[in-house]
Each structure stands twice: as structure tokens, then as C-alpha cells.
Image (tube, rainbow, N blue to C red):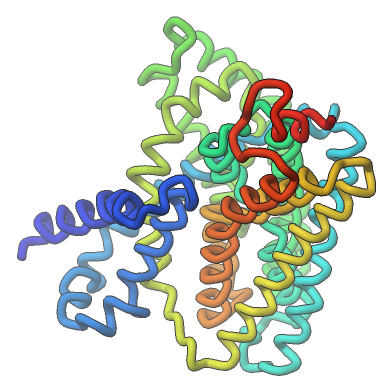
Length: 428
């Protein structure tokens, strides 16, 4: 087969198979598409396809055949970082109410704390999982960050499918997830800087620490206003057309390049590019980028992730890492959120539903895990276990939220005033 033919077969399978699987499984409305896309990526990797059909696996996923997928996957994940940043509303930090602030703090600290303790417990039982050059504390912090992740774009899609966008429950979930996203990205950047500093000279560490605030200052105070004027001047009837979109993408790539040159992940640069985007440009850019990126480009990234994921259920360390991380995430996010929301006056159904919704991890977790693996902070075995944790956590979030809301006597769909869910989501 020619390289072009192999690539077209890969593209057809990656784009069409998840949609077909979701429709044929009867799980539409219960699982977000991203879960099926991640599972397809894992299935096509060495965990299943490589075992069942090794000859075909090596034909379609040998190093030469992977080159186009790797390139598309790299572009996809940078655009996804931009999309994540665009979803973050800086105003949430300034105007978040007492409930949002309290629940967000608990939603960050509790799963990180549980994940940190779980990471130390994993190393006590399986010290071989510690990558050379990385200390126990950075490893445990990495597990804590992974346990705390909530995927804002996927959460938005789940809320849309459940008709909860615009409801009190939906607004609370999005606000808390936005605060979490930016906080966890900051923590991830600090972790990467700390680990990288251990491998550089004191001068190199000082230079990196000096460059980060300079970069952020330049992005916010210099680049942002100029970008706003340039993009706004190229809008047509309020829509982002080709010339404006090119400017946004060039700006995002330049930001990613700057951060990569500082020794951090390029995805963090893409996130910053989206986070500082002027408010009036966010929705028009998302309207142009989000659907094609998530539906057409991210499946290529999932394939690369799947090829790096070898699920070995016979490995005791794999099972224990998966179990500990999943438990820390479930208890920390769902339980911690529900208790915190209840303590600030919310009813149990809304509190539990909020915790279940914030459990979703999706693309964000996969991106964070890829960053940690590329930075050699976690091993490939830990990476695989946490990928499975991300799939399970995302898969249970929507059904669990429906169950919690029904438990409270409401329906899962937004309804006119007077219905059970309408009363709950409006705080009655």
C-alpha cells in the first residue's frame, strides 16, 4: 500500500469509527463522543489491535506511517490548548460568588491532596515507577494534578446534551471548572519548571524564572491590545474570516514557540494565548475552531496517545495506580464538591450533581498526561493507568449526574419554572 492510501485508511477509521460506535452502541446521550474517541485510540494501540493483528498493526502504525498522524496530532493539541484558554472567563476570578469560590477551592485542594498521598503510597509499594531524575514529591504532585483535572470543553458539551446550559447548576459547574483549569495549568507550569530546574544550572533556572513573568507581562500588556485591534479590523459582520483566523493561529503558534523555548510545554503557551484573548473575540473564534478541532483533528492525537498506552491488567502496579487515582478523583471531586456545596447552602441533589459533572476529564486529562510523560515525570505504565482513569471518570460523569438529579426528584433536562430540576438549578 502507498503511504497516501495508508493515511487515508487511517483518517477514515479515526474520524468515522467513534461516531459509528457511539450511534450503534445506543449510548448517545449517556456518554460524550470524546470518551468513545479516546477508547478508539487505545483500542488501535498495542493494548488490543497490536495483540490481535500484529501484522496489520505494524503496517498501519509503523514509524513511517505515523509521521503524518504525529504532525496532525501536534497541531490538534495546540489548537485544543487555545480552545481551552478561550473557554476560560477571566471575569470569573473577579466576580465569582461565595459559593463558586468556596467550592472551587475545595474542588482543587481535596483531590490534589488525596492524589498526592496516593502518589506517595504508590511509590512506597512500587518504587520502580519513579522515573530516574524525578523525586517522590514531583511525582506525587503530578498524580494530584491528574486527580483534580476537569475538562472544561467536554463539560460544556455534557451540559449541552443534558440541556443544563444557562441553568444555575450549569453556570456553577462552568465557573468552577474555569477557575480549576487556570489554577491547574499554573500548578503544572510550576511543576515543569521545578523538574526542569533540577536538570539545569543555577543560571539556567534563574533565567527561566525571569523569562516567565516577562512573557506573561508581554502577552497581557503588549500583545493582547495589538492583537485585538488587528483581529477586530479583519472581522466581517462580526465573524472571524480567513485573514483574522490566520492571525489568531499565528499568534497561538508564536506563544507556544515562546513557552517551548523556555523549557515548558507548548500547550501551555496555546492556553495562555486563548486565556488573554479579548472577550468579544472568543465566541467568534470558538465558532470557527471548536467543532472541526474536536471532531476532525483530535482523533489523530488520540491515536498517538493510544499507541503510547499499553494497558496491562496483569500488572499489579498498573491496577493499583488506576485504582488509587480513580478513587482520589472520585472522592476528592464528587464527594468534596458535594460536601462543600451543601455546607454553603445548596441542596443535596444539586450538590451531588455538581460534583458528578465536575468529574469529567476527557481531553484535558489526556493532554496533561502527555505533557507529564514527555517531561519524563511519570512512567509509561503510570501514563497508561491514568489514561484509563480519565476514560472511566469521564464515562461515569454524565450517568452519575443524571442519577443524582433524579434522586432529588428532578428531571435531567432543563424545564420550565416549576419543574423539579428548574427549582433545583435556580436554588429553590
